[in-house]
Amino acid sequence: MPETIETLREQILELTREYSQLAHCANRPGYGKDPHRAVFQPGESHVPYAGRVFDTTEVEAAIGSALDFWLTMGKEGAAFEKEFAKRLGVKASILVNSGSSANLLAVAALTSHKLGERQLKPGDEVITVAAGFPTTVAPILQHGLVPVFIDNDPQTLNAVCDQLEEAYSEGRTKAVMMAHTLGNPFDLAQVSEFCRRRNLWLIEDNCDALGSTYDGELTGTTGDLSTQSFYPPHHLTLGEGGAVSVNGDLKLKTLVESFRDWGRDCWCASGVDNTCGKRFAWQLGELPEDYDHNLIYSHLGCNMKPLDIQEEIG
Image (cartoon, rainbow, N blue to C red; front, top):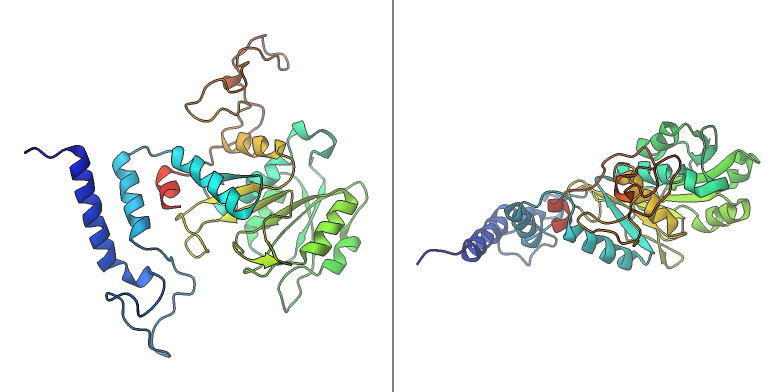
């Protein structure tokens, strides 16, 4: 009897599970429960403190995605965004291709002309920390903004928040962007109070801190925007990959998606049409009346979407 596509697929995935069970046992969490994994020997066994942690489920998902060969962002991405936002307790999460891209998009969103008086413009100042990963600071410079550095506490490696007021400049300081260093939360109470009082944007770089808590609340849930990295050494890996989470005004979700998706003004998902009900009823600038909203680009964006195989793994 000729084999069906479904039968062949199940055979491939069954062999994938068997292969992963044998080949990837060192990447699975826990010792002593897996007959294929060596027993942990104190003082002798290697501890993969920053390695990938996965099991047959993720490998099967990756191969299944390759068999489907959808390639670009699809339904699994939408499902991941929804579930991840629910897990964090934020209003929305937008998947991107890396944590560094997440930082770039978080800053880019705040430079949108659609924010009116709160738009970040070249020359505006952003308070950040003097020592940290470069892609926390790089987006500030890449958008013509001015980083204003405060010191790190040598014990926690996080910002010395008592220097926030000294770093503030009336009319010039517009935002604060800093990371929770190596999973250790910075003083969110002091930073968020400072930002509220001064009417500043707050971007939490949460790339190293998924699952960390501050005063009983998850990090990445306090700032107007927060970012996440899914690079292999981090708490949840998609290979490459990241996310921008929206905790404040949901307008920011549309802006992040615009900069991620080539700068498109239209917010319809790929393959979805006319969700606003007026695709051909927009009048923007000097464009002709009834110009197709799907073909309007309101920002200088890039393509920073993840691949379907990453979403399946996630």
